[in-house]
Image 1 (tube, helix red, strand yellow):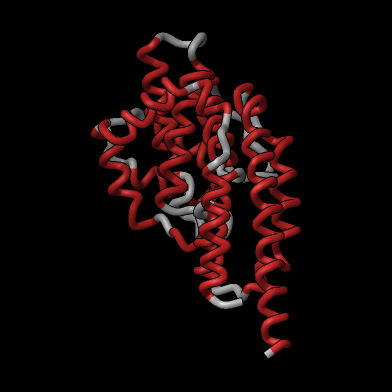
Image 2: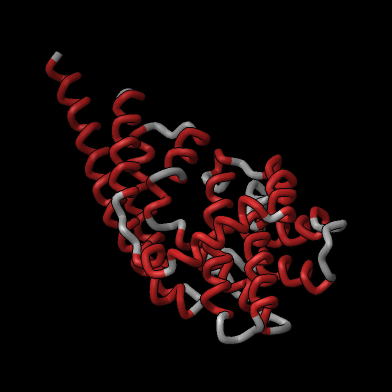
Length: 257
């Protein structure tokens, strides 16, 4: 399969993924709009976006766009989960901290035990930010606990648990259609996988995506997360078929010439 064939599959995959009409964004459109407003206009978030930029590696599929989406969705989840628990001012603070968690969670993505390393690094980055020590502790705890299929640490307080849970769910929402809009292609490009290598890895990748369904932590994530995964698996199945068809067509063309 030529590079042009792969680009063709990638573009079709992106088009399919963008057709997913997810209830999470339909049902919480107001919260999503507010979260985006915070992301693009709040001075602390603007500063943090600049500070984390050198440490986000798109080649691992967990770069700038990924962190932005996680930050925005973590804040939306925080709004929903804290609506009846806190005063509006405290809810707003948790939403802000949720976005910071999203921006920071993959800053050590290339390291072993990247979640723990990222938690430690987050404390350095946030050292002179206008935050309390509790704020930094809660962010670090959330970052350290965002990996799938790992034992979850025990939160020291309710806010810490909320931040950890909304970060985890927002990150795992990306295992849905986003996998086939950005993540897969960035990883393929970075690793320089051949088409055969991509095809060989695909079934196992889809199996892992399916397993994430049982791991969502917030009430909202457990309701809406499975739809992300379902859409991702549907798109992934179609992408897998397209890759095999392109590869088969290429082999037939070669044998006929």
